Length: 380
Image (cartoon, rainbow, N blue to C red):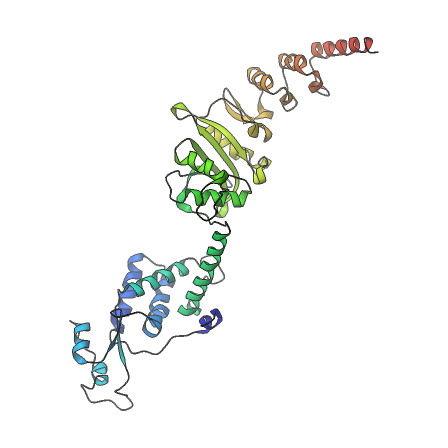
């Protein structure tokens, strides 16, 4: 069996094909109809054409040995048999140096074997953008390209078997464009939804797409999220930078009327998203129709849902919003920019130690000092 190295060194065979011009014309026509870039069209007309003529291995009727004039006429009709082919078939006087016994071949330009090879090579050629081969395609032979395609896809298969997944463009849709990236939403109707969830998990190192079966993508933690998304009970969002690299994953439960209850906001390894993405997260959340609840993940990254929408905790200045926040989570008083006296009184009644070191209203400070002195008097 030939090794990959042999394939990389392989060139083009020598074979006389009686319909070679029609074969080249079909290759060029399909390339033009597809709208291939000029470099790709030139490569196909040169390298792919030579590969099909000299190297194609396919069963009849795609590849046929031509031994008789009648057979050649039937295959080429309505075009005539080329004079040089008639010589080979013994129907004309051989020219000096021409061997009449050399075999002749005919190749179906639209055979499945030809189209499959062409599709594979076009995929390879178009994927070279941004690689060292970009702009150097004419140096690559068809056998080399096919060997590289096989090697790359074998590597992809090995990764998939081990749970590795590639980004699936049709599994997400852009819902918000940011300055440095974009938020995409997972499309519940995509056949690649689960594969994209697995991709998100492997990049983010969390459980969103961790399925019990890495190959079939069922079971495990991922099943819960995937089923809920597929059934319309959960919406999933991901903040992506260039090349679809995820940085933040957001999940939201769909409530009655379509409103969203934000559930999780995760950075890598289930940590809070890094601070520089706070603005992007707020921009998305304020674009969505969300419920008033603020999940713990949001508070951990320093954002909160107020009556006026989502904002950073440091920007919560309205007293009613501050009161709502500290009623549920008194410790957040230390994150507020300027807790009002009423907010301070509320926290003092719940856990006065949370106010230690904060600038306090005079009345609150006096009350806390008196309370501390009284406690000292009664201490043993």
